[in-house]
Length: 396
Length: 243
Image (cartoon, rainbow over all chains, first blue to last red; front, side, top):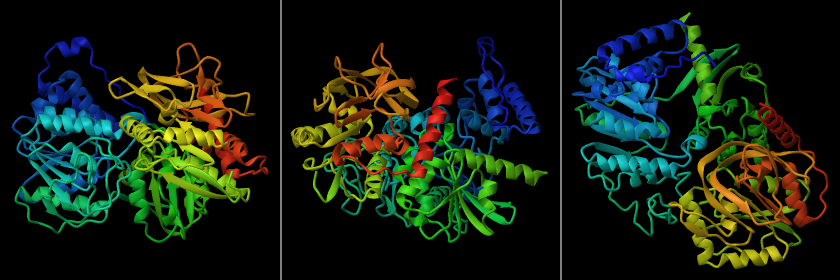
């Protein structure tokens, strides 16, 4: 782990009212230092300074600004980027481009973007209630909700509950949801300004039972439906096509952009795929961070060898039990290698599933077995380590 | 048991499937097949009575509301009686986390109220002040090597007087009853624990304990990926415990 700037607000600091502009200037100095020391992009560090000096920075900085928030378990960064790209057609757009999606990352983004620009922010699921209360966005795009980092969020239903509570408090916000996700239907059930986008039925890993009342959902019809409380029976606002998450997120971003007069459709879907050359091979590295994203990534594997990197540090989720909730049958016919700190958990899982594979100590060893393009599915910390390393290499 | 096949009943996977415990069914099936035993895994849904005639019943962990939906279903279909029958006819049982709580006398509901469990195990569960999350490891005189898993729960489970736990905790909390450091319950063919992982994936010896309890003596099976995983997790637990 690279060094980390730890900043804590002391009582004396918060008691003094530091001018916001000074807080921002200090934040920017820290961000430059952080970049110079190669500790990261600096957004988080700078935001922490700003918030330590001015705990009200988010609501201050969001005043008289047009803000769109994007949240969900998967696809936040790429969808927010797509939305910014689409909105560029009608003027400048800013946001937390590096994916720093907690209060600090958002404060840093708001502090550096000029006042006149629209802002598209991706927001961490746990932080969404606070963000809605403090940022007063005009629009909110919700992509999906499923279990993620169980040790941290505990229960997907608790997160859904917190979303519903905050959305009920903000009837003025326009909300766009993927209606095929029963949790999002639950979250926005009583919210009048909701655009419910239907894509056609798709399974949900955590929604066998109703998020509202706990009854078993009926999945036999054209859409899930709760036989007890009728969740899922509100009409969809419109129907769109999207069989993969990438396509669906593109449709949702387009829909939001259309509200701002953007008719441009010629935008490429964003796929958080990073290409890295390592020895003789080109690694196409994809971030997979929870069961839903593993299922999505495994369902869309190109031909060729596959390397799975499984870690279990903080943001990866400390518990690897979820490995057993994923179907690996699409790996049949591929050459498969597993690596990462929890490679033995992954290896035994594949062994029981009858998927032939090899185990390697590290990625270099794994990559050395192949030539040509290799698909790499990397858990969060592995993905971040790889992409940070390759960025540094590129900037040299 | 049924002569031709081992019948594993995974109970209410749609409700008690949040923590990957379905892997226990896969591991049992894998290890039984390796011994030439044919296996049927039945996913018993909560909108139907619990199937009778299972050899091993598996209860996994789930979210609070799902846990209550599960116990409601078991009460409504009088599945408790079916399960008690199966156990008295020699079936084995593995209950994890919420599943363990369901089988006891009572457990806390969403607002702390007492929810009646099935009353099949001599234990009850109350709510704790904080959630217990992390690696969990225990020593048991019944097993040659420590058992390891991952716990993630708020409930504190209190065993009735004289009831044997699965093991003595040396990392993490386990049942979390005041003044004790034990996890789970071990009573004949019944195993309960707070260990996810899934617990049988990380502890092949425990998987074989359950299989032996219904199949009799088993041929040895040195499944290297399982042994490697168990050893690596034990060593991680030892190193975490010594810090």
